[in-house]
Length: 106
Image (cartoon, rainbow, N blue to C red):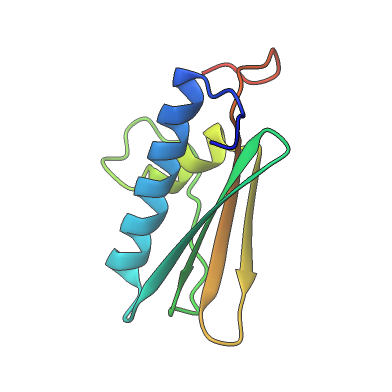
């Protein structure tokens, strides 16, 4: 990945973020979706566009809730999480650092 060191933890977190965001786009949007991965400044920015204008609901943590923890996990493992309305649909972007740091341990 562009000569940037990637920890095993970070690789797993990026895989989780991609899986959750693409799954949500396919599950809740009526049309196509697009995935974009960009490596910048020791992090990967995962961006998923879909055709739905409805913003996602990040539910508060609830250990008794069955299911619907995907975005909760994405927010927890990402350094940044943003939802942008587009002229058609929306774009959800999450950033994950590729090296382990003292600030983020999971």
